[in-house]
Image (cartoon, rainbow, N blue to C red; front, side, top):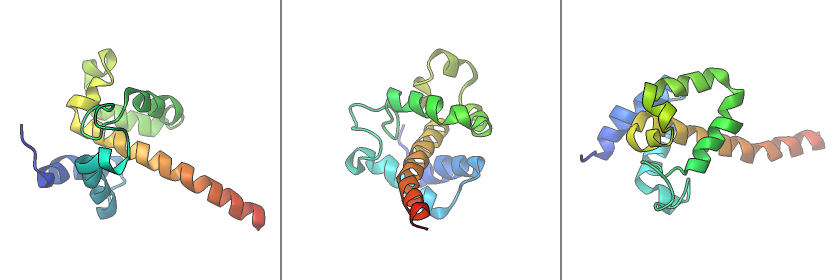
Length: 130
């Protein structure tokens, strides 16, 4: 199956971001670029190591559930709503390869978490100097 960038943007990325309540043109553009050039941009993993459109590794996938979504039950519920009912339980990493909406949501969360982690020391340093 051939998917164009516009189809990916209009039919996968935008609806997923709107479902999560985080849609902006900048978020949409970021994820489109990540899908097109994820390995080259170094955003998630190298093409041979990751799964699905964004090349997310199984370890990154487990980590986002265990160390991020486990503490955000409302967001976890929304993300789980994107996953297949039975397939997710038997092969959660398979969702990264077969479910574009789910994969897009996980990619967004990985990016959000990395951005938040990068910003935390700046806030801490600013608070300490105040």
